Amino acid sequence: MVATRVLTPDGVVAADPDWSRALLSRLPGARTGLIAGADAPLATAAAKAALWRDAGAMCVDMETHAAALAARRHGLPLAACRVVLDPARRSVPAAALAGLDAGGVWPVLRVLAGAPGQIATVCVLAAEAWVARRALSRARARLGPALGRYLPPSSLPPSSLPPWSLP
Image: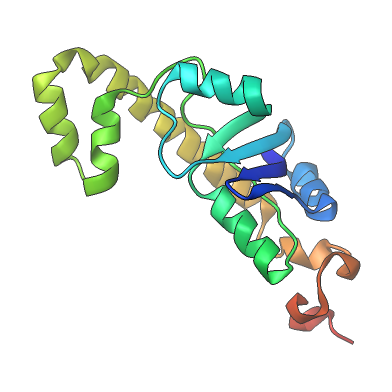
């Protein structure tokens, strides 16, 4: 997913078109659209559907909106590329959410011990996480270490231009 815009608590931040085109040219098959930011996981299928219906968001995450606000605050161009882990049609099991705050496997295992019916959905989510991690690795390889070198200097403010692009 390549952002065209990012929905933040302070409004919408537009992605830089040059950077977005550069991402899309290197990520065949990537979809584009609005990425919504949230400070907590959007765990239910109903909540994800409401975000699509109300805002037109293609996906939601907990990081991109912070980057968008920082880019706006510092006058920098924004580009965002995300790999979607959990599909909108399915809720995230409570056991998977248990490990987010405390981190680690023990909170997850405690929830699963009390609700073993969630084991299958947690296993599906784990498999999807593996697939997403591989997709992210492929995207990183396709983008390469010098992505910014190929953007027109006009898309960057002078203070952010890399040293190799200065006259």
